[in-house]
Length: 209
Ligand code: URA
Image (cartoon, rainbow, N blue to C red; front, side):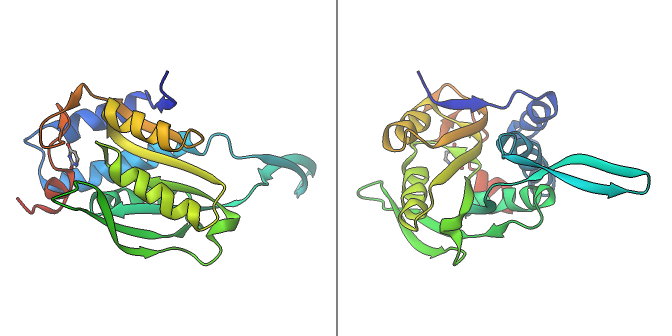
């Protein structure tokens, strides 16, 4: 049984269909990725703890709720994950942001980090790491490893499309990390692209191919 939450909201599903469409250009792709990330972030923050406070309204005292737990940090994985950041920050503007850059070693096919800059107080925060695609899981596992070695106790991973292989890889390496995805596709091809997926998310987002 995979430990993954499928975000089935109609608005998310509609945007994913437009993202998949090969005729969607870079500008629209960026807008859609950001909007989908914002909506998915709504789901990924649903379990934030609340506490009751008393607020003086113009007409009396209200017992009302405010977020009581740790503050949030977002960590996009370069390149494509960066396209989800703006949408996530629209929802949680006060979140701090870490950056992780990874490339795939052509021989070992493993993710290698070339950049990692995290907020100094990240260990005191709840962290949501994101990337558009969760393919083999190698980048996700590496990013989660870097964040957990920085002392973070609560980590979520959010992507727009996942392959079953990637979900299994993250579940096996980090069973406590909850994955949020908008779709779980069929499989990976020989080049580790998700089928049917949406192609190369970075290239489509930045028009590099
Ligand atoms: N990265 C992408 O951009 N697309 C895939 O299908 C897999 C990994």
